[in-house]
Image (cartoon, rainbow, N blue to C red; front, side, top):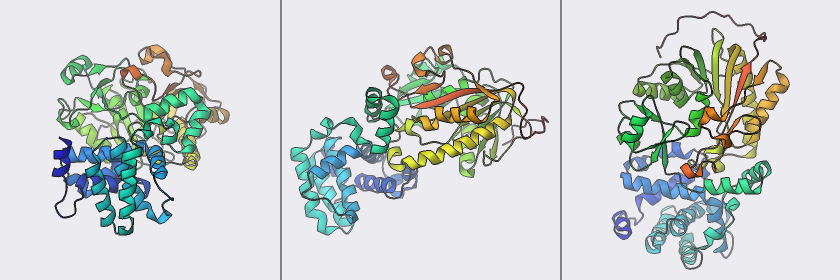
Length: 461
């Protein structure tokens, strides 16, 4: 079957399979252009022309290359007589894709090596064709089992594993990194109503937090209920923060940094009056498109959340702040290679600004949920401690296990939500996520007095 597939997907003229060329281009887009893989997949014209089968193969190639990039580079380096020159980055990326086929996907060597050599030649690197052939043949002969003996930490950038080990200790950090290296095969779903019915209809299980989970085995838009707007895709960790607001029926709730709109949809489905704010027009358009499909209503605003203010102080606010997204590495293996430690400090400044803005938007007694999809304290608990140090008018309201399906292991010593990739392994895992529930003190007097004038709330978008 693999032989038939590989023969079918070679060009008669170039002898380069289209999915391999797309995978190579996507890897270059991430590592050289620093483009998110999700964006590269959308923007690559060749990817759109592939069949579903070829598209899945190309994505699997690049995703597995990124997921085990540190390991793959070690194997390649061990099979080189001398290091590749810096200007030979094209050759290295071809070797990375081909090594992924041999070491991780266990694809027969004849197709892999032949295509890699011709891909190097097609890129104007003829002087490296002999080297490419020799290195890949050596990997095939000597290194097929080596990759699984390498320490798990070495698959990721050193700056990231250093932080994880310092923060969580060796054992937990190792468990997280090993979970990150497993390809995610689960689809998490939030339904508007009737979870039992949709679990049966979709062949899904209901997790303790209420999320539906099933295996990814078909196109999402081909599943029952998608086109009817009965549900949307949302990781179980990302669905928890809205639950921490309690009953929001009839309350005005702001969703800051709202795109792509999963939490906005949750709030609207729970009959809140929702104001969704995001800075980029294309992201607000995405929210509106999702709400249209789901037949839900929210007021969507294009604005910088650090500067925008509502016309009246509101009941509750959800701030899912921009962050390093280190909690999403299992599903998005490009993340470690797009970030650096310097990015984290810059994000922390923005998160502080957003928290200050959020405080001014909520009326005394109101609730703020601060969340990030990060595993790093600098983007989680340290931001809350910094907030407390500069603002005496806000307090933490600890989360209890009965609010999250009895999953007490997801609550840290401060009473905040802290999920890790190694959590809920028996259910198929969970994204890394942090959330803290804050209450604005009743006796607080806002520094910048706002006009408390409730206008007619319109659902027009």
